[in-house]
Amino acid sequence: MILDRRGLLTAAALTASATVLPAAAGAPASRTPALVPPGRPLTYGVVGDSITGRGSFASSQERPWTALLQARLAKSWTVTRVNGATSRDAQGVTCLATVDTVPFGCDLVVVGLGSNDCLARRNGTYVYSPADTRAAARALFTAVAAGNPDAVVVVLGVWGDRALTWTGNGSAQPVSRVDSWDEIIGECCAENGGLHIPCADLYDHAPHRLPTGRPAFGGYTTDGYHPNDAGHEALCQRVAQRLDLP
Image (cartoon, rainbow, N blue to C red; front, top):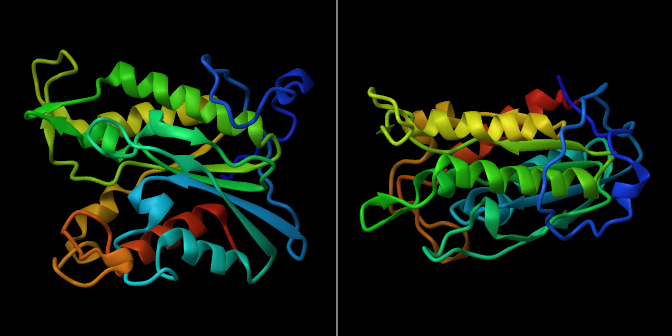
């Protein structure tokens, strides 16, 4: 089911700056899904990391999954893309808490963040705790909802190996860190009426990220972690199917 944001926030909330991340999260109820009717203008917002925001490991600027999705949308709508602005943390990666501005006034927003929150390490220790991720995700998704009250909001799940185990949740038995972070992100997304789309199963399919060493957009080469062209195509298809795009 596609979720929308129509009527979920008060007029008072909408008077606040759409690009400043709030300190507290809201929990509006989800309502009937809807994109604007085909044939009309559609404003498409994107905010994310190297996979979603920059698409750095695709072979060309036309091949990142967000660009493929934009081309798919353009078959039925007149699309204008609006990008959010991000920075990097002390580890040099883009995370949920390093979004400086979010797109606003959009009909569709895609957010792809959280993989680095899940996987980033410093001196062999994971940098971010579940509490860190929950707080950052709630603040970000609240900001996206406030700035885009009429939008369908899509939040991509963690891109990573679900077999990676972790005991930092206090459990005696190791659990999947990727699954744990997906759960946190999904909960915070749902609190703000968004649609969480897991994608770790697409990471599991090695041809979506291997072989390494192939030339990629922006001077990169495939590294075995980031999605290659096949991976980006799979991400686009996953999102397009969940949105029930024509």
